[in-house]
Length: 140
Image (cartoon, rainbow, N blue to C red; front, side, top):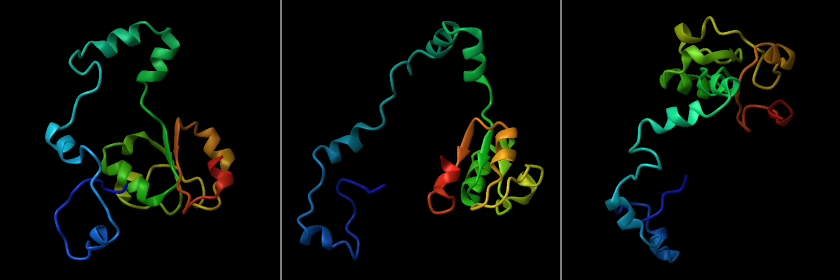
């Protein structure tokens, strides 16, 4: 996304001053305050207590590992780099890197011609698509 707030002066950024650009209110202070933890961060048992309050089927679904189908080659590489390679259940024929991590993952066609029946049989919980790589019909 677009960066807000004052940044270091760099060559080529003179357009900011010319266009009347001003930092977002509180931009500098926000950086100094640092990252704030969300509610419950100070209580590590909160998540466990919330899960215990759910019906057993819902609990199992929330704690189960995701089943990811990646229909975007660059996203496949990123998922593997993030340690989610074992969660991949489907990929396109163009998702070839890193080869050792994706070799055993079933292919479901190309980025533009996904075999939706095969994809449904693999039952992913998450499907990664990209407007530049995949057709709208596939994403829907």
